[in-house]
Image (cartoon, rainbow, N blue to C red; front, side, top):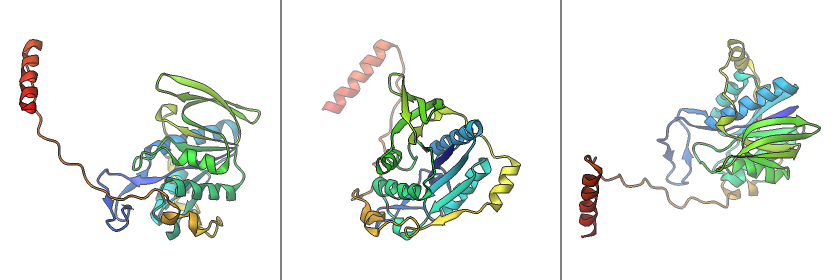
Length: 260
C-alpha cells in the first residue's frame, strides 16, 4: 500500500507576524513545527505501512525551511519526502494550496491512500484536505477517528460526528482527514534520527509539477485578506462570591448599572 501524507509546517507560537503589504503570514525567523494534527496523520500512515507493507511519502508545500519538517517525518519512519517550494506558491489560500498539492500528487501517480490532519493550527479552515480530494476527483472522508478495515480496494472507517460516529466505506484511492483520537504519535528512534540527517529530500517547483502561474499563489487565490487587526483587550473582570440568593442580587445590580 502506497500512502501519501500531506503535512504543513506552522509557527510554534500564536504570536505570528503579518506582512502589512500583502496581509500574509511572515514565516522567516519564526520557530516552526509540524502542524500537531498532521502528526496523527503521519502516525496512521506508518501504522498502515506496518500492517500492509508499501511505503509512506510525506508531501508539503512551503519555504525552504519546511525541509526540517520533512526530515522529522523521516525520522519517525517515512520513506520519502517531497517539498514544494517556489516563489510562485507564496500567498496561496486554501484553494490554491490544494490545487498545488493535487498537482504534485498527480505527478507521484502511484498511491492508494491520502491522509491529512483535520486542519492546520495557523488557519483552522479544514479545507485543504477536502480541496485536494475535489481536485483529484476521489472520495474523501473527514474527521476519521478509526480505520476499521482495508480490503479488496476499499476502506471502512469510523468518522467522528457531534452526536457520536458514523461507519463509512469508500473505494480506494481515497483521502482521509484524521482527528487526534485516532492514535498516539510515536517518538523518533536513534536510527530514524540518523537516517533523517542523510535522507535526500526531493524539491519541486511549479515547473516540475507543470502548473501554470494563473492558478498558483496570490493570483490563484480568490480569497483575499482585506484587513488584519488585533481584537481590543478585554475589560477587567470580577469574581463574585456568596450564596445563590446573594449572587442573584449582585448580578441584578451589575445588569442595572450596565443598562443605565
